[in-house]
Image (cartoon, rainbow, N blue to C red; front, side, top):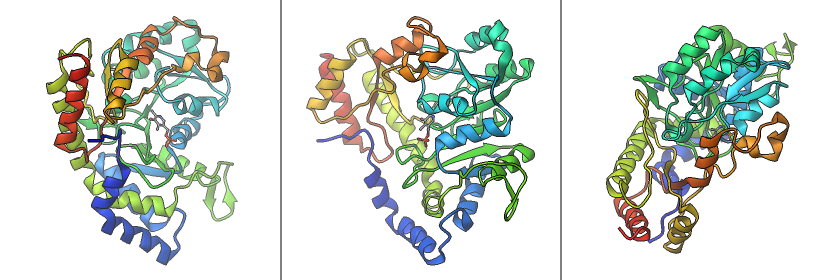
Length: 372
Ligand SMILES: *Cc1c(COP(=O)(O)O)cnc(C)c1O
């Protein structure tokens, strides 16, 4: 048996008729940029999350940059976020000339530690913070109750990095409802994936939605009338068509991911030094990735690879130790939980089309490594 980390082709085969028809519609109407398919997807994605507006853009990176831009974050401002995330979270801040200020994660959930955020907000450097960007890492919401309360007290905005957390809920309410805006990625391997680059922003704020729509289209308020300069961050028609064809299945796919996660927990809890992902109070996990931790990560990864089971490390180097962010002035030891996680985490195969025999094969493989 062979188990990949994810399998995009299996999902295409399941929906081939719908997806081919949706792409065919774009080819026959020539609505290659924005257009009806994108507008329909925006409405459906917003509705699925119980949010008023969705603004479709060209990538998840753009979906994080645009709301910060629309909120007026710029040079001299700071944005609080975590070092244990994909680099795009920090780039969204840097590209505006603002400074990312980092907060360590909690060891069990891998999301922002609200106590550390509180300390940062109280520190002298914290005075420059304009926004907080918690990351719903691996598909689990961050502690949005405490984070939103701290943001409110300090008069700063919240922009959720929901790039890995489509349809996840915090205390029953979907991501996209816990701040000014939430950015999503539709990179092909995400829980909802396009067939190219794509992203989207959810917001309940009418004025912010309008501002982001204008910014994504060169600041146009009417054809060739530019109220301010923006940029080209528009979504392709074909991506809107593919996403629209897939969205009706997302709930079912999410339930299957959660089901696979339950099977992993049942088969692997207490095996060797393995630590299962913790789910925080009020949080829901949609398992973009199922990430375990062990001090024997490299050996385990190699052992599983020998059995044709693919795994991945997300992320092997926390961002404060990347050359790209050396200028922030952080050092080894500054974010011990992020550093320890980067050495110990391992993602097991996770996608909705995984079969029960494949899940059992992964569990057997991991157990065999630990002699369990
Ligand atoms: C994927 C991802 C992004 C960036 O999304 P792209 O669509 O690749 O630009 C940002 N943040 C996180 C946490 C991600 O996982």
